Image (cartoon, rainbow, N blue to C red; front, side, top):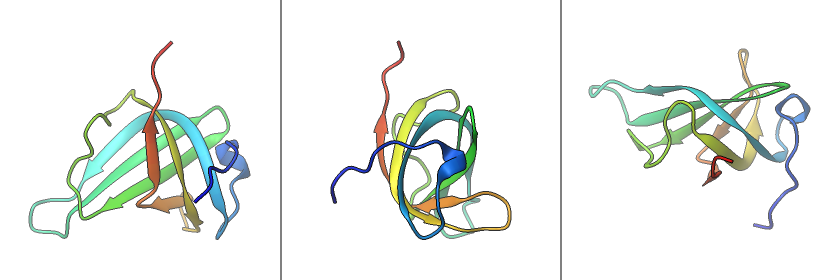
Length: 94
């Protein structure tokens, strides 16, 4: 998959491939009695998007405050757009 240009979160289109960057503002881990899923809420100056890593309870290096770049197919939801199992890259702090 070739790298898509980075766009503002507010500009992502459902069913399209998008690359977004921002700061992790929240994480959620499913309880041990549920199927594993690690959810990351990413925010930039224009909006928020959720990234769900299925089959995982953690992703090394990702915690609240982390700068992150995500790329994947955008899924529409009632609350926020979502990316399932996106490619990710930790962005070094300046």
